[in-house]
Image 1 (cartoon, rainbow, N blue to C red):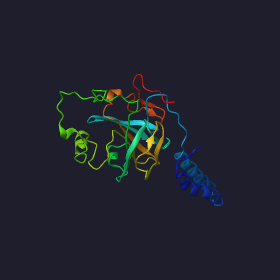
Image 2 (spheres, rainbow, N blue to C red):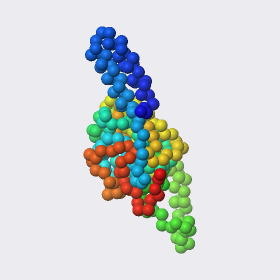
Image 3 (cartoon, one colour):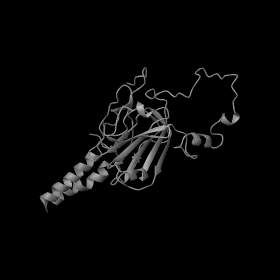
Image 4 (cartoon, rainbow, N blue to C red):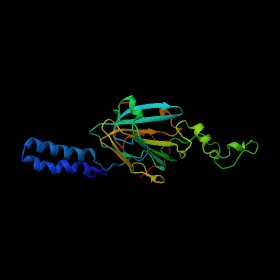
Amino acid sequence: MNFAPGAWKYAILPLLAAPFAFVFSVTASLVALALGAGTLAFFRDPERTPPPTGVVSPADGNVSVLREEGDRVRLGVFMNVWHVHVVRAPFSASVTDVEHVSGANRPAFSKDSDRNERVHVRCETESSNLPASGSLEATDGTADPDEVVDSSDADPTADGGSAAVAEDPHAKADQPLSDAEVTLIAGAFARRIHPYAERGDELERGDRIGHIAFGSRVDLLFPPEVDLEDIDVEIGDAMTAGETVVLEAPVGAEIEL
């Protein structure tokens, strides 16, 4: 069995204490042994095999959030204590930014959890498992000679990215552009978020991108071309990270082996 980084740091103390505690109390020894074994169970990291196509769940757990936010769709997966807490990439993508945001530690299933400590993994993706963007009219790279082009629209980043920010309510002027985001959210007992991904990394579907020590919630903010009716899961559905399909691939999508 594989374990996420840091597992033995938390488990070693109660496991070492168990035989010494046996001298004084069998009960104390069993409690220490159970605590160490339970900690390792929290950090277990089994292998996962993504299906040939489709966007996969980033986390084990149950769907707790499914809503539209402007022109985007947010899917949230709540992880209970018995779930695997390793987070995986839902589709192939390039990491553009990894940001840690300090905050509270409210229960992850509550509305107040939107203010919790979190890590945003922002990325750009052209995955064939996502719907194609409808914003590209031409495919041959040529422009309509009768079309008047406004020079202010030639480079959306020429003014420091403000144009892109105006189009994307989730973006900030000092953030790299991205079209999708996986957010690892701490909960009432989770105090450690460990991202594995770094800016510039190339992710494949199902790759490990981090873990949350002792659990919580993982959100997936889809690219703008994804609509709520495209999502194939509902509130309460059970998820398996890297394997459960949350959005079916378009017809003719490339199969990933």
